Image 1: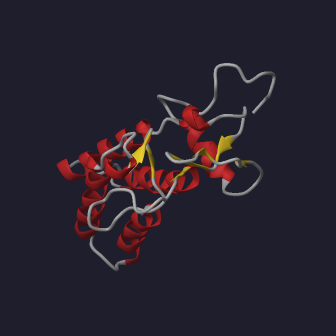
Image 2: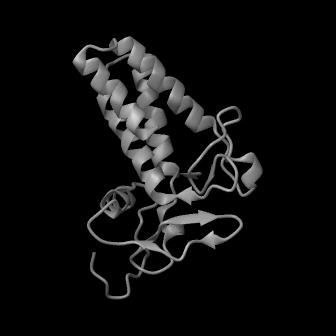
Length: 167
């Protein structure tokens, strides 16, 4: 969904869709994500701690199968969410709502929750198995995960004590 959100704005810039068409699609997507249930019950939620499950049921919008919460997929989603929040900057009610929903979705992600080994962020979590044993590290998709976590205005992805580790 994060890539699709970016694609809508690119479509406007390239003349494939009108701004109004893209705005309507983005607003529908952000409203869906904002209303999607978050909670500890995996059968009845789309995510937990502000993160989203890797796969959602197309009909219900809730977790599909035994898919995990993915920190990188949530980061990719949030990158698209933040991009459209910045792109749709006109002074009208729909674009103001896009900005508001984008901000609220980003602020919901509880990045510190995904840190077990300072300063690394876990790759995935499931209610059945808890956190996977692998962390994001290195110059790869981890960069986006860390940038979004460190930039979070409400719950930055840095624990209070880094134990001498300098990010």
